[in-house]
Image 1 (cartoon, rainbow, N blue to C red):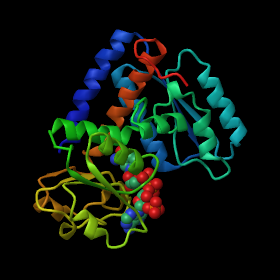
Image 2: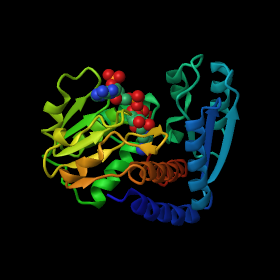
Image 3: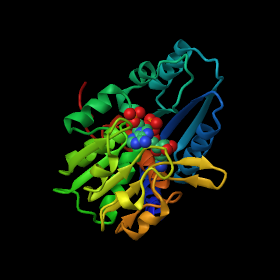
Image 4: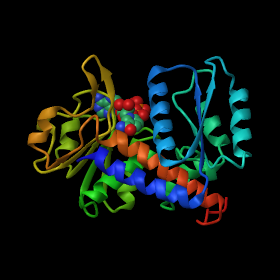
Length: 279
Ligand code: NAP
């Protein structure tokens, strides 16, 4: 499944929408100098620039306190030029991530990590949904992968990927199993999956003998190795799966495209063009 090609198309659509709106503002906040986070922020800015989104890159030192970060988030909440706010995770250990996510105005919550956004997803009333699982749903739609009635297995249960992925699939009427590090006999579950999403971060955790013939396999994992970026799924899974996302070039570009889509959605909420559920 070619995530790069679909992402390029979606980004072009976003560009047209941004032109129609006149201004879409995205504020990204990075605390500290984690090299992987720096790469992600740069990619998000490059894509924003290309789509005409006015992205502002806030960089704070690693020793920033929780109160200082909350103060910046509140400033951005009140800034009329900012439609979307993204605080890059992981945050340094002195900062309580949950408090920061709670501080983000739900209407500007383009990462979907505020408890209001997450609660809406839980209730099946979407607002802003985390970009990675949203990007996966776009890919499944593009390739016309049947979801309703199918058996889906999500490996990973993080708030950013695994859980929202499972909820989106459930909402699309799949029968969903969630696996994690304490799951016994992972293969027993994955072998049953017509749709398998791996969001673990352990290279090779999914091998060909764990995959049902003809399954759709989505590899969300990204691990940096000396050989470059690798996913969670072994290469020989391609011989068993009917559809498979590559790493890189699969879910990664879709995440960025979906994030830009979220920024446009947030801008429409703020302009009253889309109804935002009252809090
Ligand atoms: P995370 O917070 O570390 O969560 C990893 C999940 O995998 C946890 O739920 C963990 O279980 C589970 N797990 C760990 N080892 C396992 C094992 N051996 N068998 C089964 N489950 C296992 O990571 P994340 O933020 O969800 O990200 C997951 C991966 O996706 C990472 O590689 C990350 O870099 C990548 N990612 C990619 C994109 C993209 O755009 N492509 C975006 C976001 C993340 P417990 O809950 O029991 O600990």
